[in-house]
Length: 92
Image (cartoon, rainbow, N blue to C red; front, side, top):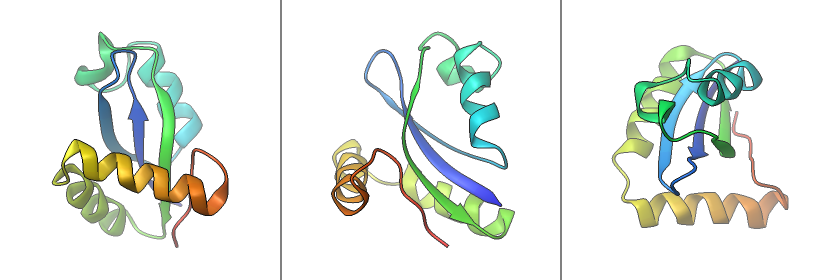
């Protein structure tokens, strides 16, 4: 399974990425071994994710989310929270 995800950083900024292991990736972000962007912004908190069958699908979605404005990302996060009642969501 491939995941596209959004984390909220300590400073309130949002970071979007993709991974094959969400738990491991969040731990990497929080120990300074994740993306350069999150190294000085830890801890991060997973606020959104989607599941995909292929890396290509996950990367395509990551790119699409990165093109959104901050407000659009927040709306995406909040719409999924309303649907699922949790911070994270799924897509297949």
